[in-house]
Length: 475
Image 1: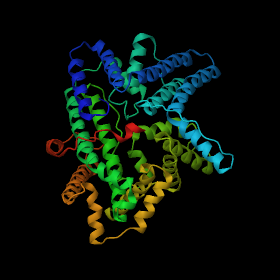
Image 2 (image 1 turned 90 degrees about the vertical axis):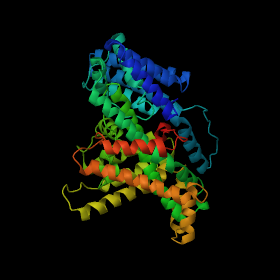
Image 3 (image 1 turned 45 degrees about the horizontal axis):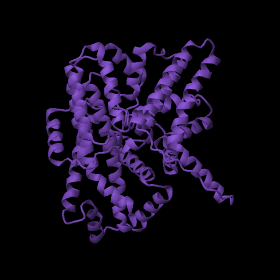
């Protein structure tokens, strides 16, 4: 169920149907039951791991609050955080760490093989780990109180395991979510309608665009030397759109599901490819992660309240953590480092500038982000360099190369039609988001009846339903 969009939507519809039939005081328990069932569908043993971590963080949150001195509070804080990070390390980073150490020993001539743990990465572990850490840190900092009793424990478990957000976020803050849960979510026609529209928008991005581009991107990245350099350039740009539509599409669906259940959810994307600089890009891309890293990594390191050199190191360190959070691979760390260095040297853009200046800044930012995505998408740093080298050395605009660069879409004479269809839907998305950026409403505004009709028809008639897994569920 967790890997199939349509089954997830059917499950959510069933939950919503029952949800508004039960008394308000029981709705949080219904959400917890639904979240547990959703998680169990990915593997019963995974629930023991995530649930155990959640219960431990719930308990240590109470102990932090009850501690009489700051020193004791700090002891309980780390007692809560370290086991959670330990689980994340073992399941996600152990093989990467010991493999890297073994590689360094081999280079040094000391030899040795690395042990390998055959463990499946638990669903949503990166997301719920960050939720638990922020929960404990906020109690330690006095920003919120701990949860208490059976009701508090149930509400906290619902927050951690909330099924619309468990796969790929957004990384919701506990205060915002639990406040609504305790109030007993009620049917709100406007929020319900907005939720349905956000689901349609998410499906359009994911099924109509991201899934349509996925086959092309996978084919070219899988064997770049088999295609012209132009195909590599096209695959790099198509991956930028695929990743954005896949991830922001999931966020739209998750936010929409929460809205349908009477829960307002924070935004996660705000038309990031219209950014005029890298700083603006990170204020629009994966907003819940960016704000989490700012509050719990960047600011504790000193933020900008330190020397200029230390400030730049804080920026770089934050982005390296971001890269490592995305995956146990040096290519992710390098991707994070690229963005960190770029942020270190960038300056804030002037607010009111002419269109002649705005457009080049947007294009330069988008191209830079696309270049960095190559390291994010490639299986290794070496393969990323190989991909980029072939994109440059094998580049040509000859008729044959253009034809062969379009061919990977279908492998037959329908490739041109498929390519033009994909470009047409990208144009539709561009026009919609341009209206978001330069119109009166931004950040997931309600769809007009015209856009709703266009997107819904596109999903029904042109949706690619085969490849329905979400990219960010792997992180």
